[in-house]
Image 1 (cartoon, rainbow, N blue to C red):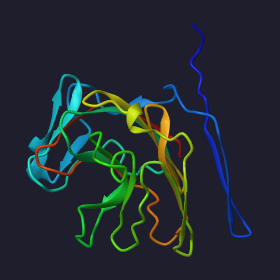
Image 2 (image 1 turned 135 degrees about the horizontal axis):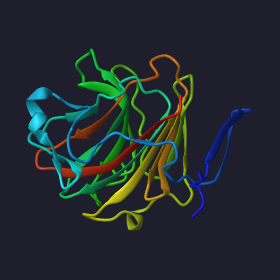
Image 3 (image 1 turned 180 degrees about the vertical axis):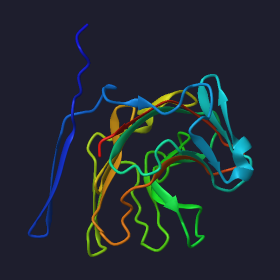
Image 4 (image 1 turned 135 degrees about the vertical axis):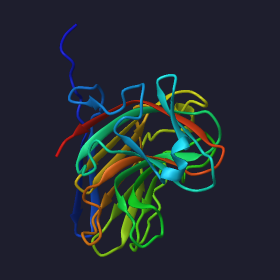
Length: 242
């Protein structure tokens, strides 16, 4: 067997005369350069927020298990590096119940009290919860406008606060996502460009062109949204690219 290789995805957005031009090619796969951030046995390097809901998080059968104990936001923050800027995150997830979950990126404390954290949020949930959650991007801002970016959408947020959206060809569909079984996710954050893949297919992506208030760095956190939700995460791998 030869050495592992990486297939790169290249993306480019150009504004020309007010027209959005898009070029994209390639795929992504393999684990070269990635490091595990979960040891499969303990929650070392992870902390619960709020601390009062720390029992929401446990290790079961080699996976991090989140169990919604209340109808309120509960997070498990990766504390091994809380100033992540550009990175790739790979993991597998399994929804054992219906529910709403996901991963918060470049997160920081929301000092306004609107939510526990500000962050860019890769949304997950059970098959059937709808395209505005499963495979979507959500924006958790304290003051800025929060744009929709559903599954299948490519969103460009312009510097002046307006936006442009188009449909991703051959984006991940419900038939590509397994019910009550393991699915692979891959999240890329590079400058103002974010991509979200499920089972090897692009689900949604966006460019945040607004400089003021853009989240430049922060921590990664797993999220629970609802009481009764049970979700598992395993094979969490991180590569910091800047």
